[in-house]
Image 1 (cartoon, one colour):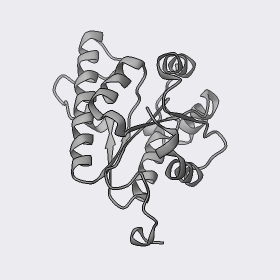
Image 2 (tube, helix red, strand yellow; image 1 turned 180 degrees about the vertical axis):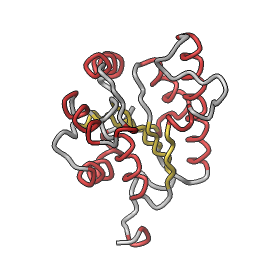
Image 3 (spheres, one colour; image 1 turned 120 degrees about the vertical axis):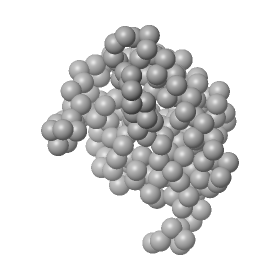
Image 4 (cartoon, helix red, strand yellow; image 1 turned 45 degrees about the vertical axis):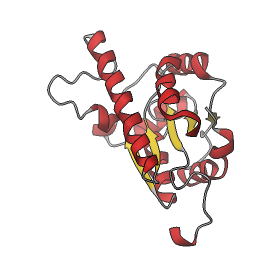
Length: 189
């Protein structure tokens, strides 16, 4: 079925902004790309790509010095929100791929994007995230050992918000179908 033949989705046409988050290895990039590709007018916004627009002086989110890392994360979040708002204004559904680790950072997105924001937390569990990471090519692996702490921080900060989707037994096509069918109603932020 081509995009033109699809039944219009309530997610399409810039009606909402999808923020897909979760721990490293949860499947954010794969799911984000698949969901965006299933909509007729969409744009993928990779938080990692936006963060790496800083070339000289780049500090990764958990890097040193911590104050500079936090400043660059705040800049990245603001830029992601601006891009998302611009895409929605132009009639495209932005699908954001980014780790949002706590309530304070989620609030930036909620404030900037308002009621059109839909939050999907891919939550397959630490063991699945680690296994998926090990399936990646070596140069793409992200040796992360803080899955339990990250999930606890996210849950404590915004566990009652959005849609926490256990994807441990779902492949990308199944996850994409779930998101397309249910995110508009289930992922309110």
